[in-house]
Structure formats: structure tokens, C-alpha cells
View: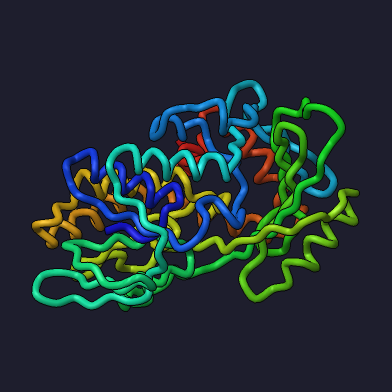
Length: 339
């Protein structure tokens, strides 16, 4: 059983179903809503899922990073990433899992109990027995809490808004504003007919006021505000008993940018390759495999993240050096910056 039909939970359900397992996929709300994150994702997304024009809004060629008195271009000579319509993408992923054979049910997870070699799952519609339970239910994962697993070590709060423009957007690069947030950065992402402006702050700081200051400085209008938590720094354990976590629930996100799609999809694939519902001890192998694949990048990204909080005059030499080192850098692999 998989709890959470976001992109990671849906992908995990499909991967297990493709391997001949029966999967129930639970989702408490409308897939893709409310919107909680930007759709900017590296070009590696299509190493994991098929490309469909219906959810691709924009091809992105690099980024321009603004550091108060100077701007620095990175990767402007090549296709680096895409902007996806997250509502359409999330729904495509859930439909893809259903077509593969996953039993999709709109129910809210309430609690779990492990007994006699199975997990008894309680929802708002009844109880189920399952050999394994996967929590893909986001940063505040109810499955994680019910299983007694620790939460990620850091949470950021991202807030963003959309500004509609007249006619198609010609800009094909993202912009990063290092002075928009004392904890992270601000961004401007072009979509098909609008720009997304947003920023993130550490949980507990006033994200709305930070967005208002950002809007005043950059001259954009704040319309509807969207928000979501960004979990970072995975806990020491993401599996225990017959329960495991994947995606935001496990803190499998990039501290460098806050994105979680690529890392979460990677972890879902590793889980499907490794975990045998008949042998719950294989969850230990999943834990080892995803950490071997992702933790070095997460640690490197977290080290770079601390650079955002430096005074602007200390950031400048790092940006200059980073620009010289960035020819072969990859946004999902921070360690590539040093190769």
C-alpha cells in the first residue's frame, strides 16, 4: 500500500505494479491541488518519466543569479531544465499509476498497527491489511508520525505567486535573487504566459512579509499566494518494521534548490528494485541504496546552501569561481561543481 498520490507515490505505485505486485494507492484530496511547489525541474526528469507536451510549459536555458551589485550567468548556452505545469503533471502521474494497475482510492490515512507480519492500515473508510506500507505523503507525513520515525532535520517554508503577462513569455532562463531571503533565495521562473515569483525562509520566520519585501523591490504584484513546506536533511532512518518513506516524507530533496522530484523519483525506483514485500528485511537494503545514491549530493547541496546566507561581498568571489567551474555542473548533482 502507498499513501500519497503525488508524483513520487504514483511513480512508486507504478514501479511496484510493473513488477507484478498488487498496490493500493491512497490519496486524501484532489491530486495536484492545492499547488505547493514550483514546476522547475532538471532535464533529467525525462530519464524517469515520458515527456508529454501537455504538461511541459517551458524549456529553460540556464540561470542568472543576482547578487545585489552584480549578476552572473550559468548554463545559458544549453538546455538545462524545464518548467512543468504541476497540476497536469501530478494528475498524469496518478493516471499513469492507475493505468498500470494500481488500485487508486480517495481515502485519508488515519493510523497504522503492525501485527502478525502485516500492517493494519486505518483510513476514514475502513481498515486494510498490507504486507508493506509506503509513506509518500509529504513533508508532514502522517505515516511517518504513526510509524514513530523521525522527521527531517530542517524545514523551509516556500511561498510564491503568479503574475500573468500579455502574450507569450519569451524569457527562457530562470532568475535567482540572493538578497530576497536571509535563509535561502528568491526566484523568478518563466512559464508559458506568466512569471512565478517566490522565495523560501526557514520555518518560523515570516514568509509573507519576506515576499512583500521582495515584491516591492522587484516590482511585481502579489496575487494569490501559494505555499508549501520543503523538508531537508533526511533523518537517520526512513524505514522500520514494514513501513518505509519516500520523497518529501523522507526528506529526499535538494538543499541547493529545495526541489524534490528527481531525488524522490530516484528513490522510488530504487525501492521498487530492492524491496520484496515477502521479505521486510529488504527495507534495510533500500535504506542503504538510496543513501549511497543521494546522500553525498544532499550533503554537498547543504554545504552550498549555507553560502546563501553570506554577506553579498563574500558571495561575489564564490559566484565568480562557480561560474568558471560550472561548465560541466549539473543542478541535481552539486558534487559535479567540484569535478
